[in-house]
Image (cartoon, rainbow, N blue to C red):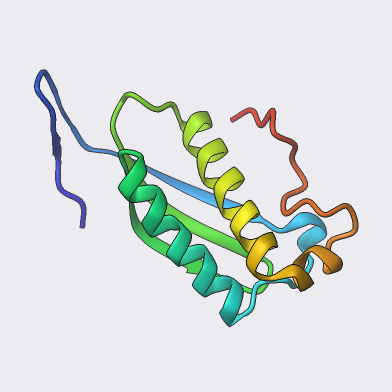
Length: 114
């Protein structure tokens, strides 16, 4: 389970559960894509103050249980994770882009509202 994040002036234990479905619920997530997503999330955790407690993939969607500091809003976390993981998946698994008609991973655009 998560532990509290201690900063200079606060202690926080904020967790979010996000589900990212693939566009049109297309079956695009296989073992290779799952591996790329998890490796990318490790890189994101090093760069940002976002801890991935759980990452679960199914064939057409991904679940994230994320812990973060109050510095980031849920919308910012979603944008960071979606943008970086989609770029890495498309770069390392080009067949995914072919399966998605417009080359987007998610049916929502970059102005996602929660």
